[in-house]
Image 1: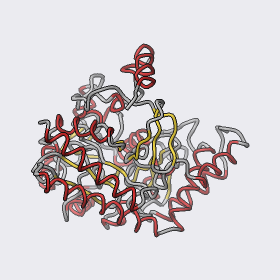
Image 2 (image 1 turned 90 degrees about the horizontal axis):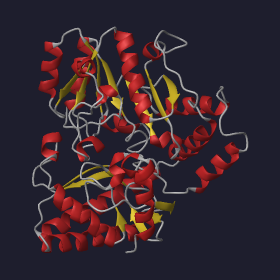
Image 3 (image 1 turned 90 degrees about the vertical axis):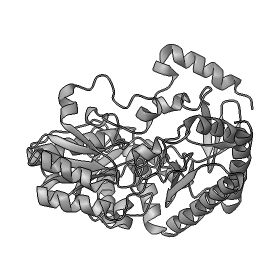
Length: 432
């Protein structure tokens, strides 16, 4: 596999970009070697600058449900661009988007568009604090909600991948207002609420965790959080930046049958364009300026090009429920193949999956929280990642990330992925 152009670009990038990348996990530090620079993508494939071609299971960290370069979305973007790239003023597409989101996710009665998932989660927490007139929040170890100061306490995703779960630059005051609990441990949350009675504004959680690898909530865990929030006047925030519209038309909250007060969205509602949103109960959302006192603004909020891409995506998902059936079946097939390979080769590993999201952890423990995820053999994963590249499959360059399947993955491609997995595992295992 030739990588000369990617290597040259990385050397140039390091001179002008911190670490040579614009998002930390892309640097490949957790898996060894240098990052590949991508030139284009189509359907189920990525092509790098050296013209290597890979079946890929990241899909821009989730939003490319229909695969790359989907024609409907591209057409919508091309049409919107004719009217200018940005207005900085209201446009009809953002109204259509808000109406569509509120029709697909019943818990969202009103919604505010922003430009990223991080912006959405930051705004949702500020809104919860303004609404309750309380300062503290509870988050969960290994859950990543973007790079806002309040969230870089026991964070997942790139923070744990690079070994810096608590970032310099986060003040002690912010840290004091952020309480952390283990994921799937309702008793710990109840104890925190009791010890800080009347002080907690919000509990924010990924209803299905995707940033310590894929971790599914235990039966009753989210329901228990809902009951606690109702009893204590706490705002329950579901971070569905990854899961919103991916796991179902109504997100994780629909299939898990738990209703949050606020929901944050991103990725998918832009069809791949930079976008985010937060929304929820009318009485809470009406605290947002200019309707209420909690200030939040953004020049690119409701950007017409992003709205056009997102509308094309959501309208398709809303009218083609068979998408979710296909994703469920094809992802199950891949995961069953991976599990069979692990067993046949005698390799310690466990596969977590829900819908079209999954993670292969190299540990023999059941992974239901951050501590279990950290028992994974990350050195083995790094070798496995590089072996999969050699087999033509591009994975997330970190043990602590979820993988995402698109509708572009056919049964034939699923079989190729399973075979590549077997070859990669065998090659790594024999060289341990």
